[in-house]
Length: 102
Image 1: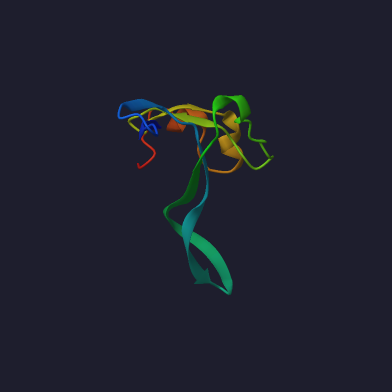
Image 2 (image 1 turned 90 degrees about the horizontal axis):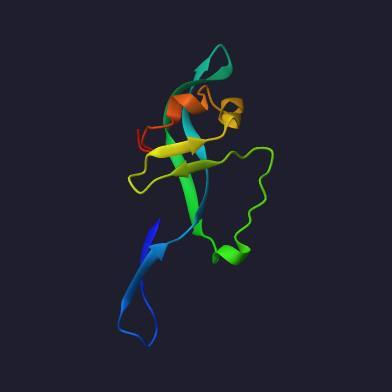
């Protein structure tokens, strides 16, 4: 993610990129049919994002329920691990090139 910050004591703006760690869950509308809940529609994705510290200490442990994606500045997915198919009805090929909002 692009970051434009003003350094303390210096009146020059410096721009660079920050690594953002995003975690979240899909929000699904459920319907009751014959006494059980059935997913009907995906409402959206709810996420929390944290800027990671400088590159020297930005390692994040990848748990078994995580997968890695890379997104460009236009919020288009440019890389995705194949593990996404373990959690969604999509493959990495299906989402590479799509925007994160579509």
